[in-house]
Image 1 (spheres, rainbow, N blue to C red):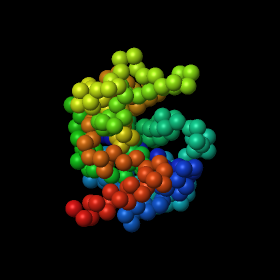
Image 2 (cartoon, one colour; image 1 turned 90 degrees about the vertical axis):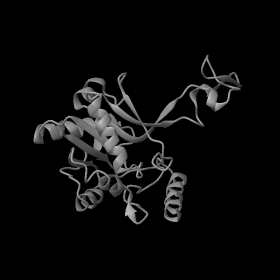
Image 3 (tube, helix red, strand yellow; image 1 turned 60 degrees about the vertical axis):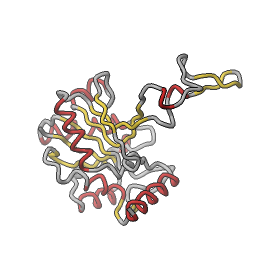
Image 4 (tube, rainbow, N blue to C red; image 1 turned 90 degrees about the horizontal axis):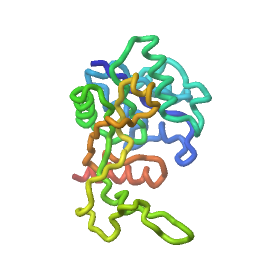
Length: 232
């Protein structure tokens, strides 16, 4: 089985400028995602899609493959992760041969572990290459507790809501945590989405692994998580 690991790391970030090369625990953020898959045999290459020569040089020095800089039209705030992924996998398969899966690793999820990645790849194989998504339990953001505003008043977002019920009395719900997306290239091309009706959940139980860094507050939480780990 051949899986292409894709790390997307563009230069611009309005909420957290320079986050991809900012050091977390003494290591640039983007390097966390490179290091976690280096020893996984199914990974045929670690391809980094970036528009920044500095990020490209840093990633190459740390063992990633950066054959080009991302086109400007795919490096804007409005460019979708699907378009970026398709650009990368289409180029790779044309130049270096077909792969069974495309594994998207967003640098903003630095704490995913090697064992979690291996678990996701195993699920991908066992489920005949159905898409696999990293998810976590929606304990404090259950959809049946969601509200909307109508005419200045709060109304249940769902007709069958769970307002007034204890969390343990609600059906299990999951949210995509951004740490793991694995899909067959043909499915990504056909659906233009990492999600499909036959998607398989990979439940990530560790709160640390579910940290998704998009703001300065998220960054501080990540640094705090590292402090806790050192003291354990």
